[in-house]
Length: 445
Image (cartoon, rainbow, N blue to C red):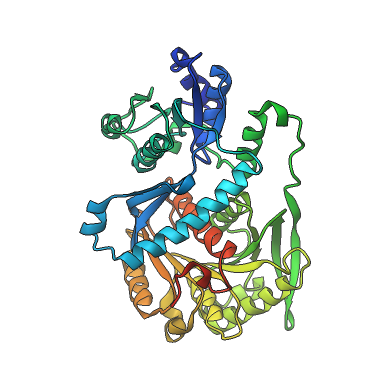
């Protein structure tokens, strides 16, 4: 490990940037992980700290491949070569851009509150992230900063693969990167503590960097966070409900293969969604006695019926009464989520499937109206094929995203983080914008 945490990385990186002290500069942290690194640099150089909110436009059906990027003030960059080679039509491009622009707006509003963007005109823009993996976001950020009037662009990151660093000079006037290992698997491997940075932490650091707001108290983060019991007929199911203050959506987790509310994978994703300002409800689909019968795990009508009842219960809770609802399903739980979403009376606004078995709801896939994101590991070949077939059968807005080198449970380093980020972006966009099926975004026929 090279760095204890992002604070340590920021302090070490600041020492490489001291020759910029005294220049008219602005530190631009890329949310979320780049902000705590950038905070230390801004403190050391005594310059303003701001965020540069960038959203990658991923190619449909291969979202990891970037075909462009968008930023604040209507900045829009399109890689025409990628668009042409990937055969992306105008309508597909518009759908992707509208979805990502909704998330861009959400993050900008969340991070800035009543703060205006720092004017980059004639200044040195120091763009900071906690590391670089593919370099696409960093490249887009540099171009956007220049488009916003920066006289000089400096890209500063604690670590990046050696193969990427050389090419970054094409978009930045200077690249500062102390560590450039040849063996690079993920950014997190170079930190002792690479805990996810939350939205609240970003807001707090920006507040602390502004002198006249340093004394402002932080907002109350949570309305409700407790264990609950949900009645479904004669059965009572255990769950955990978390609703952050200001939440406009609640995601109900539908566990698969007999796992419950204590599933570490789903709890991790739930924490990421909570950090992004969304509520979550994790609950046990089956009682301990029912789990003993393996057939119950594959009884999709039973699981979907319980999901519908749990959703109705959640709707009756004061903290979630007006919230839009999303379903996050894993394995057989994804089939239950799609089955429940296909009900004509369902008002679920978005569905995300992680390593799901949509084939178990095959007869109902064409009736699902909620925008659906299918996430599958690149090495989970059988399930990937099943998801491709399911997507072809669905008539709602869908996207299939393949996480390269991931297996069914996404246990490899950094893979679950990728899932959480994809899910957060999908839910943030669809639960915050448009009518109950997202038609306000133009993504649904």
